[in-house]
Length: 177
Image 1 (cartoon, one colour):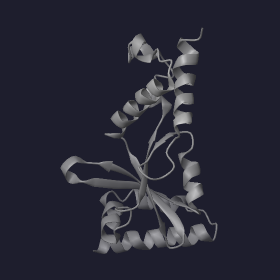
Image 2 (cartoon, rainbow, N blue to C red):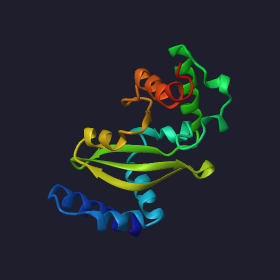
Image 3 (tube, rainbow, N blue to C red):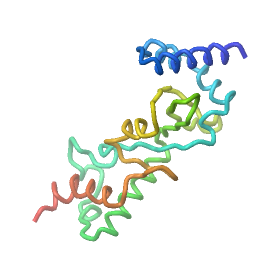
């Protein structure tokens, strides 16, 4: 496929420039503006399909951090005192949000870590976009910081962190004694 070759050339160019520490923003724009081309490259190369991924969820997605949380929840739903109940609430909210959330897949490719966002398009399958390059897996993880990370295998947000997020956004804000 000609378009896959073009995308492959762009990605190889981006990686080479990245490794030489040259700017790659223009190349990333070309890759991402290609519509289906990048997605077709992913399937052609079988990149990301069996690799690690994480869903990134913002606190805003669970709690209306700029408004009133009680517009989305009943007061008694959030008046949780026991960590076990808080974790159950957080895990249910995260699971619900992951059903329609964008996942970020990443893989080691030609000596660098590459990533892409992935959305499920129903019967159309997975659709990949937002190509990015990182020097290491840790650099990719740094990109994820600041979000609640839900992942089947890779460093999800810990229970302690989930409890702290709930307490910051709900308990400390609305149920302070």
